[in-house]
Image (cartoon, rainbow, N blue to C red; front, side, top):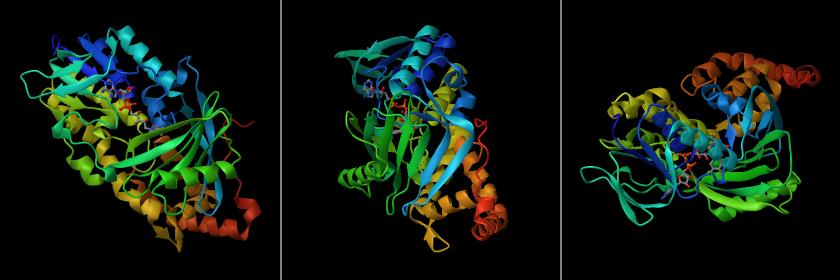
Amino acid sequence: MASRRIAIVGGGPSGALCAERLASAGLPVTLFDEHLAWEKPCGGGLTHKALHSYPFLLNGPHPKKVIQRVELISGNGNRAHLCLDHPIVIYSRAVLNGLLLDRAARAGCRIVRSRVSSVDITGKSPSFTAENVIQHADFLILASGARNSFFQATRPLAPADLEITLGYFVPSCADAIQVKFVRGLQGYIWSFPRCDHLSVGICGSLARHTSRELHQHLAQFMREEHISTDGARFYSHVLPSPRAHTLASRCVAGHNWALIGDAAGWVDPITGEGLYYALRSGELLADSLISGRPEVYPRRVRNDFSADLEIAARIARNFYHGRFLGGAVTTRLIQFIERSVTFRTMIVDLFSGAQDYASLKRRLWSQLATTLREALDSVLRPAKSTTPRPNPGDT
Ligand SMILES: Cc1cc2nc3c(=O)[nH]c(=O)nc-3n(C[C@H](O)[C@H](O)[C@H](O)COP(=O)(O)OP(=O)(O)OC[C@H]3O[C@@H](n4cnc5c(N)ncnc54)[C@H](O)[C@@H]3O)c2cc1C
């Protein structure tokens, strides 16, 4: 691949990290993005899984908020609190995109601010139009996010594979993440504190919910939590939330092209986490290209994370709409977190990425008796057993 020209459309986390890896290996790579470092609508939260794989995102000098407390709120107002062993780090997306693009440029990638208006992979080599000029490459990488519809072969994601998101960047501060579930909503509301503002928003299945509905739920949450929209900036975007068969059947690569990140649909359909999968897919594609074997990329992604996302997709509907012991699953989840140390530990592991979906069911069943005993004990002796796990940051 050493002399093959590689073009990347999109300079978000997937495109920028892929570009950095390719350029570091000496491959000639050019990245096109219409905005470059911009405040893409996003929570900006990076889990331990992402920070462990890309430690410069935790240790680097760029402004970020390190969070160890999470408050979960059920549809009927119950609250549970998690103290994370490993923090979640929250970036403004302008900062995150900027630092990843800087690393790509320092590695030798040529970065061009330009909108790509069309792409053609039917010829001998892929071509695309940027700034009204037709350009050619030997390999084309599409990292252009969830709205990608450039190749017919890849089909745009269907409404049932997407979520609407909307929210506000609010000029306010907080020290804990809040996540609220709403009855009947296939999605959730979040408040993610950043260094100097909050990203507050809501996501819901595009096939099941309207933006008007989401607006109403979000407005009620903000009223209840006393979060003002004064001086806030509104945002809205789509987020992939792929169904299992979409993940299993979607075509993500051809002989001279590949999709990475949101363009491929790689987002956790339960949590909406996409940053880790964007970075990881960019890295896996770069490794495949550097080794001269781009054809192994889809298999590597499947072995690495997409099979686990398929399991998450099968769980997602039950998670948001299912019932357990006569109540909504999300309500029971919050009650068990508050009342069982064993259950709480498992959810903390799920948050950090230490617990995958493949072995979640086994762990849930193997701990069920202990969880129920602890919950019962806590109901009978509330003062003794509702003490949360100590926060490593607390003195
Ligand atoms: C509201 C919201 C909240 C989220 N919160 C979180 C979170 O807290 N944690 C998490 O892990 N994930 C979160 N996600 C998901 C996360 O934002 C995405 O998974 C991630 O940004 C995907 O990265 P990417 O590089 O694939 O695509 P993007 O970040 O979307 O980047 C695509 C880039 O392509 C460029 N582009 C697009 N079209 C063109 C074109 N035609 N020509 C040139 N350039 C183009 C764009 O300018 C953009 O910079 C959230 C998503 C949303 C919508």
